[in-house]
Length: 174
Image (cartoon, rainbow, N blue to C red; front, side):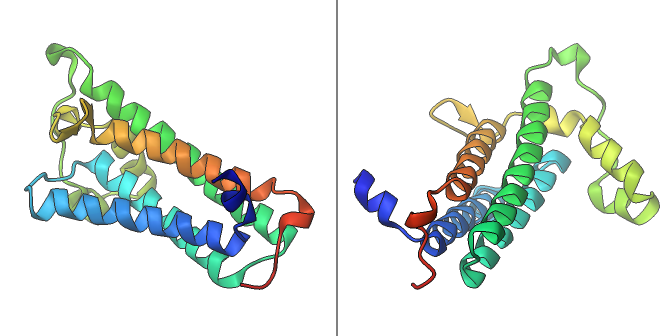
């Protein structure tokens, strides 16, 4: 199994990252539209981060860059994964606050984007609101932000593993 994984070209490794993000985004849409779990502002921000990571994985798979390009793509993906870890960690922290310390619900994301500069919107998003503290869907006792955190770590490490692949293991064809 490890030999097969090691034999994968970078193009296929990047494509597997893009497919993983596609699966995660599909699951998010299922939770929202089928199970009626409305995303909070931090959930929406995490979705945007996943989308950017997925697009970077997809672009890298399509371009099939050489060693330097692969490192650049992987570094960008890892940086977004790190931002996702920070966002998910903040979300988890909000969900574990005592009820009396949960911030009040703020205006919706659409309202913020229409009426405030982007810097203020970003600050408000990272602050979170009462709706971000609500726990919804769980699987194996972990909620959505915990699963997001796990996937940010996995995808970030996957990107780093692609970047540190030995030079002889990289193939341009595929």
